[in-house]
Length: 131
Image 1 (cartoon, rainbow, N blue to C red):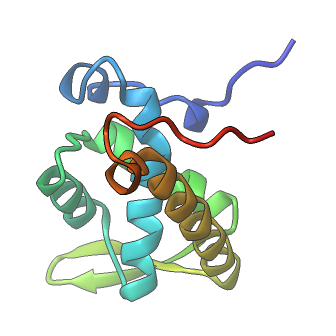
Image 2: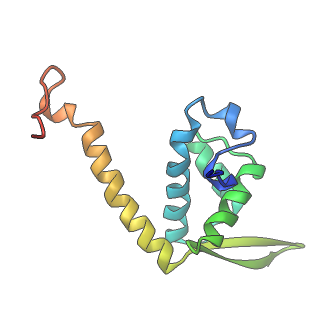
């Protein structure tokens, strides 16, 4: 029997903050993280705030395991840097992460086209069959 890994499920406080459809958003959240990590170093609190601007309310108890899982999978790499009296773990995308992000962008672009195809065909028109 297949048991889902913790990072396969979006659990914790996020459950009551996004909607009952949070399982649909978990991949989008990972893509947001990879996207921003491809532009420069990110850290957990900043990423939580950035995702919050897009309507995703994640707690530290959800964000940090998510970052750790992406690092464990080789998609992110972290370094610890001292800032004042404390240390902060900064994450950057890896070459494997860039490859995964590029592949995901292609899939998202294709899906986006299908999701919003009605705008090109008109709302009342049926799409051509795929026979």
